[in-house]
Amino acid sequence: MMRVNVEEKLFQNRYKVDAGRPHIQIRDPDVCRSQCQAQQCTTCCPAGCYTAEGNGAVTLITDGCLECGTCRVICTEFRNVDWEYPRGGFGILFKFG
Amino acid sequence: MHEKFDTIVVGAGPAGNAAAYTLAKAGLSVLQIERGETPGSKNVQGAILYADALERIIPDFRDDAPLERYLIEQRGWLLDDEAYVGGNYRAEAFNRPPYNRYTIVRAQFDKWFSKKVQDAGGLVICETTVRELIFDGDRVAGVLTDREGGAIYADLVILADGVNSTLARKAGFHPELKPKDVALAVKETLFLAPEIIEPRFNVKGDEGVAIEMVGKITKGMIGTGFLYTNKESLTIGVGCMLSDFAAQKIPPYVMLEEMKAHPAIRPLLEGAEVKEYVAHLIPEGGYDAIPKLYGNGWMIAGDSAGLVNAVHREGSNLAMTSGRLAAETAIDLHAAGQPFSAANLAGYKQRLDDSFVMKDLKKYRRLPAALHRSPHFFTLYPELITLAAHQWVKVDGVDKKSKEREVRRAFAGRRGWLGMMGDAFRLWRAFE
Image (cartoon, rainbow over all chains, first blue to last red; front, top):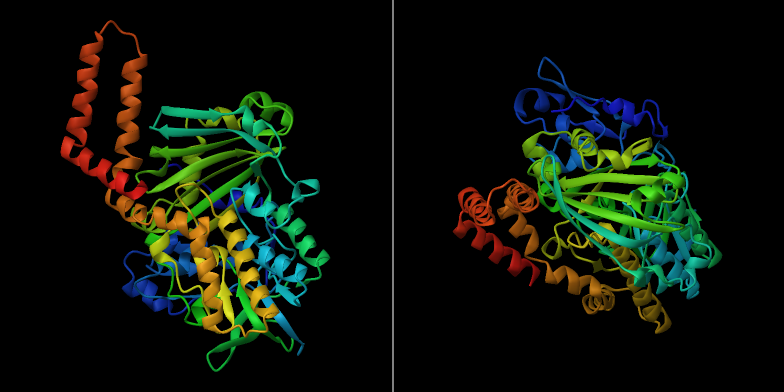
């Protein structure tokens, strides 16, 4: 598989980050760490917001989020993603879309 | 804000704008709520505009709409790892006005459409996220926004809040989307000078080309790739069923980069500079995945209603048409002094059923299941067909009969005659 740095791609985008108020949250991090084998969010998220940590945990940083909904839809087994749109005006601001 | 409107439209994409414009033009009071900084700033599409759907709403849209290029040529490619077999359809009929299809840039187009809504008398507020619907018994009575004192009331709410439709899910109108019913697409916009685009794609002036691709680029997943020409940019993207992405653990941006490196595609992108990377879900579950479309005090349109024809890569036209039909349903009821009850809004479903929207979706209702059962269409067949083409084209002293035998053997050996007959039958049934 080709190595791709998604951050380089996201760097082209325009965001208005709602600092300290992430619009998506992992409901129970323990579920990701100890129960979820697949951790699909870590490969499916097109912005690479979810990282599989060495210790089995999954961490989420929403700053680069493209607001697509993938992480919520694929979390079929545990429904462990609390997903809202950002506050009005915040988040990704597509220049072209 | 304790005003009450005739109608509230949530979302300023093609469905929401079509609905809001049609309502406002007919004289109903309309509040349209958009969460983006401006209409379009949250919206993603390939993007091809199908003129017909918009023409039925704004007949003279060509006078001032921001259009990129009108399409005179459609290319279809079947790709193996290092080869492709393709067909082009280029017609002079597409080179005469009124043009049938255009590439557009959604951030600009949606802003233009929203201006039309405002000119028609609609009130549009941006930077406002609707958190949930307000109910009065089982009737939708308004929306709760994230603004101070954020409750706003209306006789009718039209949901055009996009594929994720958080509002419909929270209200219990929809179940959660299923990964097998939704495609994840990623796309880049790359700047390239028109002087390079035109000779490279064999077009001039405002002419444009669309390329749709199927094959090994999607790594065995059900999906397609595309490359479109804008005026001064190209858009390239790839989308596959989310269930496949989840199963194969290939990040979508890796798929996109590998596709861009394909020997048939790379030369077309040479010198182009990436300016934006986007992602979007597309509801591709088809007819059988369409949720309830109306109820007491509400209707739902566009992507939020799952109205996408994945086979023909049509969505924005179904969105505009459904938005318009929802509005026309409301306008007729309003004129007749009838309430927006579920029984009366059933007229919206009827109008959709009578239009190309439901007829087309119904026609292909078997396709999603057929594709899920025959993934060979995306891997094995492109490989076999490029092999056949290779044998046909390559001159190497081997006699033609032997070449034919080798091709036949490859098809029979790799898939088997029974398997191929099964695939052909399923495909025929799905397209019938």
